[in-house]
Length: 135
Image 1 (cartoon, helix red, strand yellow):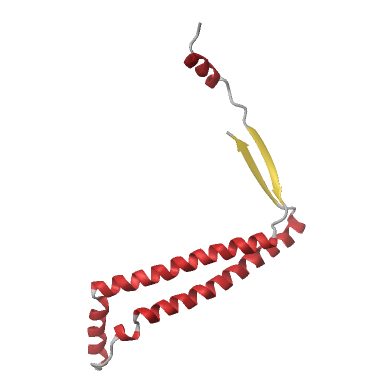
Image 2: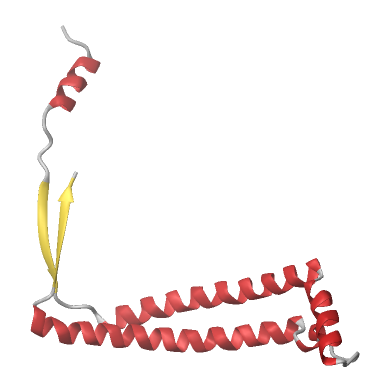
């Protein structure tokens, strides 16, 4: 009598039939693409704000702003000029937040426009042919 391991080995040696399915993408739902583009834009906005704040903190902690202040004071002959006061953390954070909000609005609008343009182009081209295999 054969063992369970031998039976499993014989089963695994049999060729696996791969089945291929070819589908056409002929419609993209407008509201789904708007929601997806909104969520992607929100996540990119959060990443952008956090990255901007982290870059500012790294530049401040390494003393680059102090070196840049000294260089610009010697070039401009103005001892009162300070780039650290001009680009403080709250100002940089608010600017990054405003840019992120604008990017969310523009990204959502571009997602909506892309879905409308795709749905219009499907009438001419017939859709995007996509193939899937089962392995």
